[in-house]
Length: 72
Image: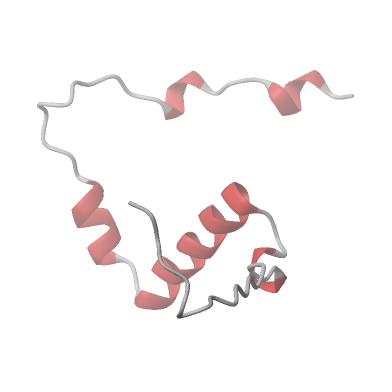
């Protein structure tokens, strides 16, 4: 494999603290709604995988007898 592919570009990073003002909000507000949704979809797929929308929650049905008392 090409080792250059996995090399970290340190010029693209910056160091700061949590108290510093961030320009992220201004950046995302400058993007179009379509670009924002595309970025959101990218992050969703990165975290949950491609087919997360096709998965379904398991259906659970429990029949309860209304005459039965519950001991608390």
